[in-house]
Image 1: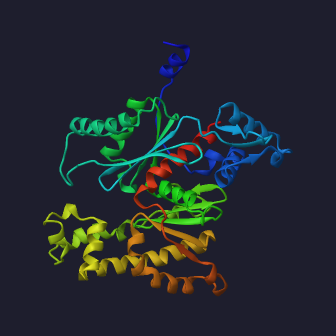
Image 2 (image 1 turned 90 degrees about the horizontal axis):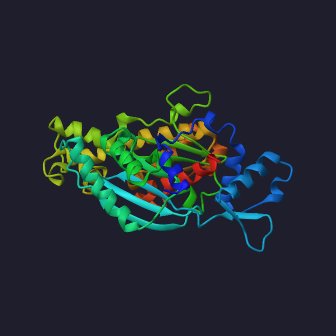
Image 3 (image 1 turned 90 degrees about the vertical axis):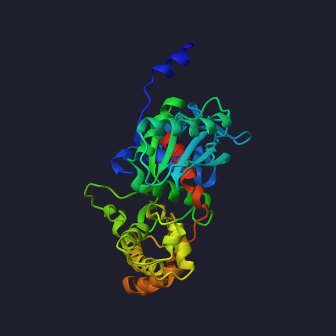
Length: 379
């Protein structure tokens, strides 16, 4: 084994969670500034930092690690190194794996979706589940035919899925198969990050991203990412935590199990475990009374929630994703009227709601992008 191979073998790889807690990055403002400028304009010039010795030192460290290249013919101007080992992001949602391979500049090299084929509500032994998921992962990874990836693999999972067997076993398998660190990220953070990066209308803006019918919030402000935190803080980020009691699917399941009639029952073949947001939306479009009632009730709650968060964080641009963009028509009117109750009149015109740009591929794209960000944080 070569010396380089021996070093890789001896390096212990880990599974970690993406963290947005401010202490993690308090000494990394220069790293965030460099990365944010690169992400916005795809290039950066030394003259912008002539008087900042710390930032210049960091910039040259990025060059030494081959994260950035000097642009040919443009002295002292740098761009992402597109030949650096590509970054792999994987999303888990809707009983599927979503794969995105991209270079450091965010250019997509490969995308694929595969169905996990896991029966809803059916128990499966850990060993059998691991063998099943291993086949799914290896099938795609073998088809990629890449000898190496960047040292962090991004795994994006649903908020209520983060500690599930599928998420944990997938992370463990990725670490084992690829011998890389694995970073687990919530779908809300990865999706919001991808929407902001790929939607040119949002790239320069501070945005509030609202994910799913529970209204999980992620704030993207001044190059930083803020999620809800479990501990008390002085900025109110704990209020970004979603409201689980407004989960449309869970409420529908409970009411149907009590015997309340709905066309949803025929759509799911009688098994309430098969109910999904798409099932509820399909029933609502057929004027199912129960589906419409629950959707409208959730819409009112989301309207109040979004308005309060916008006012609290002084961020007028909102993106709706994680499925709720499909019911936008049911609560946009509620949202606009609620804004007029909670916000000063002079701010009404500045308030904007944006449609998602990426849809179901957002989590895997965002997972890859946040891994690129993490590579710059580790310099």
